[in-house]
Picture 1 (cartoon, rainbow, N blue to C red):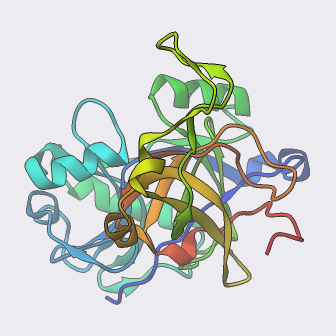
Picture 2: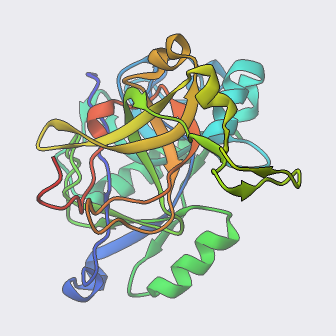
Length: 305
């Protein structure tokens, strides 16, 4: 069984729902954990880093490779919490499975989602462990409409849903047949450099500070006085990394340089007309389980360079 980069979902676009036949699709709750391709012997991250979740792997039949998400067994589901538990309490994690790439040592990726779903149900019936669960599947447009599915996702504390075409094969490292609908504007971006300047002023010239003192010449911020530098972020467009703007994280240059090239999970507010990307990004966490080249922006405007 060979490693393949897992299939991904693209962001949904306006008008997409009106362009499809709903009965051709199903939906699953989108989980905010760490993606894993797991066999009896090894667990791969989405960038082929090998991990070992022995309490999970030992229950997976030999010859099977399952695609799923590692999440906490109990409590808040978030990528940040998974990272913490991997270091402190790895047995407090479980695998939620939503696809199968190999069964009985043979690839299932050329089969439709419907056929893989049937085969996965057969495999899951053989697994008797609380550390492995099957992702719930909702028949989109038949049993549920979009609003009902989003309500279900909200009840689960999820960040959204993933909608999948039922007749589609599994295409590694492709976003062709899966789309995602997220509640919040969270995105994975790349740290491009540390040449952004920190905020210059704590109190602008001719203004009164929170301490009640009037500063005719202003008062510089502590990072500015310390000579700190700020991280910048970007995304890939046509296989080229596009720098967008400051990330809002500052510090000594030698510390900030260590972050260049990393993937950062950020939350933004609103969309810039100049770039098509989010405005005012807020850093949520750094991620070492994702390839920077996967950080693309579906609606990046044409003149963004």
